[in-house]
Image (tube, rainbow, N blue to C red; front, side, top):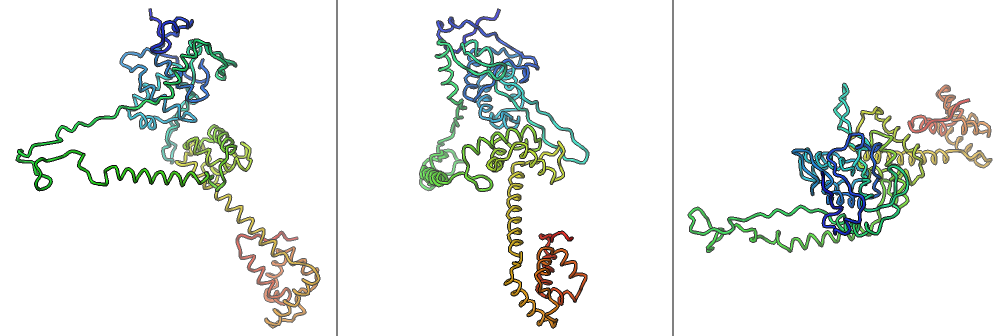
Length: 449
């Protein structure tokens, strides 16, 4: 028979007797209960409350490791600390190996421990996409996890919840559990640190009597290899200079307000809207999943500031993939957030260019007043005399000028059909002007009748 385990390590016997529910030890949880759809716990609202549950499970000793497997130890708690900082919780094995400085198998063992104790569940299981013909191999999709608080934790501490399923929320706690959760809060606030390795200098000093020892300087009696002999670059003076430089840099950056990709000042409302767009984009657009949540939120802040809806943003991201001809599910750019930022800047440049073209086109519209017609007729007479053509052949009537101004495509077609006679009919100024407009690839003349 498995003996009753304490709720918290070092807990007073009186408090342990008050707790009516004694959690049972577990060694393995079926796969269907390791998924979010089959989990019995509730979703942790933040990493702090989740770490309280982790320390409670660690101290209660609920996990019984299988043969030749590690138990719930400090490495498991360290892994939980790393997972508590991620939003969304979508780490890769390589990232966890770098953070924990351990092997792949060790990471997998302690991740399985968190899943077996009901603290972690799969929201989406990672997959490795097959290699399609003619395509480069894409990286595997990392699994996304959901941090859960097990039911045994709520029962042992007397926590009252409201709601159903995973969306249950804490509404109160018993008097006996208040002191316990306070101790767990202190443990959750502390971070586990690896002990610093001490290097033993076994050969700090050697006698000169050794024939193979050569003194460093003349007149010395000992051959010193101690790290205490240093120059000014490795002493405290260099550290003081470095710290002062960092303080100046931090003070300079503190005075500058954070700005988005397009240079807009970041606000709290913008960050909240960008966070929501990033979550939706990760679920609905596969090719953006190589970027982290913070990277996606940062590049989508400008779209949130414009007031775009979720459907508009998803359609715009689909247009980006279509521009590269890679709208399939196998397309995984290495830096999708950089691609989105580049598309944002391109859209802004295109808008500025279109606005400039519209302004120039508005300036080119001729004034059809009587004074403008007379002034234009005088200019046409001068140009006709300059080219040796009769001034009476130029379109000096108001109707002709309106036709030329508002039907440029028709006027250009008549100029091309007339050939050299276009100078006599329309004048050299209008012919040169419409010829330059037709040669400009960024301008499209109006529709003919």
